[in-house]
Image (cartoon, rainbow, N blue to C red):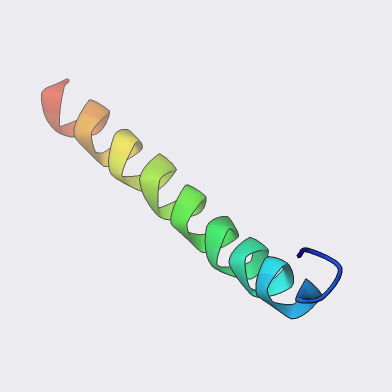
Length: 35
């Protein structure tokens, strides 16, 4: 399946990168807010 639809995996990877960055930013903001 992955060989038939490589664009889907590539798109998922592109979406995952900003999502991870956003989660890390939220964590940093929460830590700053708490302290």
